[in-house]
Length: 259
Image (cartoon, rainbow, N blue to C red; front, side, top):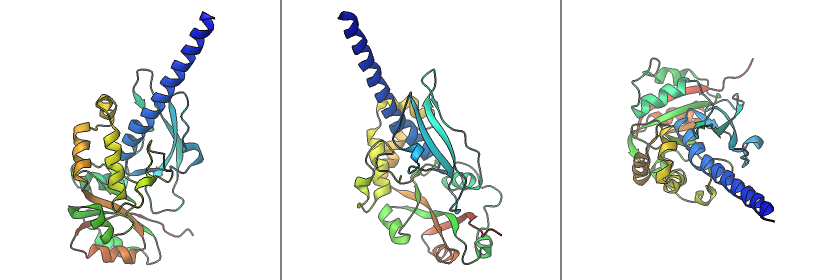
C-alpha cells in the first residue's frame, strides 16, 4: 500500500510539474519569442500550434510578416533545454528585421531604407503591399486606430523592436486575449495584461530573449505605440504617407501577381 501510494504521489507531482512548466513556457517563453521576433508572425490558428504542450515542448508555426497571402511557413517548437534554458527556432534577418531595428533606434538605418516614396509609387495599384508605419510621435492605440483602423501589429517600445500582435485563438498566449476585443485599445491592453502576469522569478527566462521585467513594466504602463504594420493596396497607403502624424512608411514587400 505504501509503495502504491508513493507511486501515485510521484505521478501526480510529475504531472503537476509538467503542467506548470507548460504554463510558464507558454506565458513567458512563447510571448517573449513573439514580441522579440516581430519580423515574423506566429500562426496561432494552425492545428499544430493550438494548446498542446507535451514533454516540455510547445509546437508553433511561423512565417515572415509579409504581404503575400501564401507566404512560406514552417513548423517548429519552443521547449525547455536540459539545463532549464529555452530552445526556440532560429530565424534569419530580412528586410522587415532591418526596418524594425531602424524604426526603434536599436540599429542604424540600413541601406535601401532611405527613400521609400519611389518604391511605394512603383507598386501597381492592384497589388497588396505590406508596410511598417513609423509615427512622428508615439500615440495611444485609440489615436492610432483613428488614423488606421486595423493595425496588424504594433511597436510598443521606444528603443527596442518589440512587437505585439493579436492571436487568432483566444488562449494561445496563455491568457484570454479575446476579452479585450471590444476595448478601444485591445493590443496595448493585451500587452499590459501579459506583463502583469509576469513574475520576478521570470527574470532569468526573460533575459534569454534580452528582455527586462522593469523595462516591460514601463512600456506597459505607458501604453504608447511607436509604429505599426499595415497591409493594403498602394492607394490607401500613399494617402497615409501624407498625414503629419506619420514620420516614415517603410515598404516591406508586395504580393506581386504570379506569371
